[in-house]
Length: 212
Image (cartoon, helix red, strand yellow):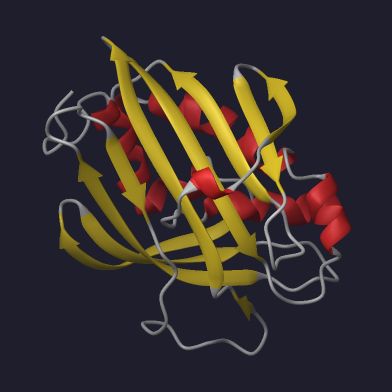
């Protein structure tokens, strides 16, 4: 049962710097490398995922900004709803994570922001959890402490390197040692789903504001 609890951890896309962590290899499967690190002041380990993907940066950004499509590839996402589209590269969304009984579902509101370095073409995608927009629900635990980051680096034509980092406190009464022990499962499954998502025709063109 608790194995499934970790799957929801992947969905948070919130800004952080991975340099503060000391990464140790966890798993390497299907070209998806997962690392974990102790975090000062937290009982939950940070996670880093590295993978080379057959796609352009513009295609991956289009997948990440497609809020309605999150349920198709992000593990245990029950629903994902667009709350506000600020610009083509910025939005707010709400998501609820399906956590098996007897634990309680989690939810969060995120502010998703995309930046690209005009010289290197490296893309950074942040999505800090923010208060407001959706009232806290009595039967769902609201995630408030989380930080993560996507860094997308073009390698060659239709090939990118992706580094995703995450450190989050899921809240509630979930044993930290179980979450840490299973820290690779959710990210690995979601990246496997991401690879399939990128092959769908609706993402073939990518977003126009990202230059590959």
